[in-house]
Length: 263
Image (cartoon, rainbow, N blue to C red; front, top):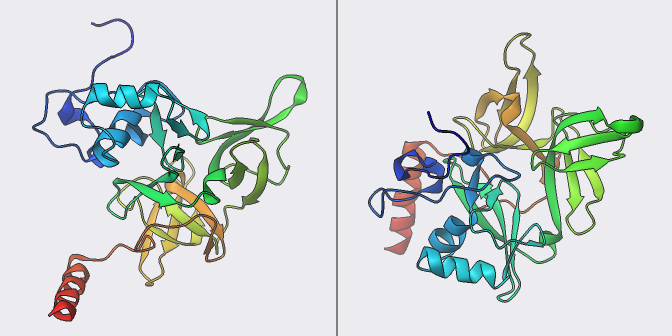
């Protein structure tokens, strides 16, 4: 039995949401220990090399990061295995580009281009609210931030709007029916809709019911629901399609309609 941390990741065991091909090697880059779990994040090398195409090889990617050109949440990251997770902001100031890590409607990681003004804020889901040493109230977010003296109205499962530079809470969204939410796990990962109601199941998982903008209803576990806006208004720019998943027949009809327009 091996002792110590695992240092390798076989390519076939890498998360499918990274969208790596099977045949270009036996191994995949393993994310370093960091603010996100291995299967809920993507290492910086995959973002730069495979998604943004700023380098061709692993060594080229290392040269890019060691030139201190890449920032994640406004901090320079030189570790090419640094885990980039949901809502993280990637800044490349030399090219003036800013990206936010989101999910597409099929549950795959999506690097969504954003404007400079939006790159200063980030939404964080509250995982726990507790009291630290000497009675100091603290909250812990989904990206492992600990924030002292939060607003007393902020509870677990709510979302806070964070100023990345100062680390201060600007505003917050309550987890309640009528608010817009992004699904971050399960079979409905990447879908966006309005929270309609919550079912409590003592001893099991609480279930939340969501309705998207086309009127399709679906249900998921409470832990997968990430509020992103008050009412129908999102606080971040959303990817194309606004998180609406189409059925296979609807996708086919849209494709045929687009072809008919071209002809």
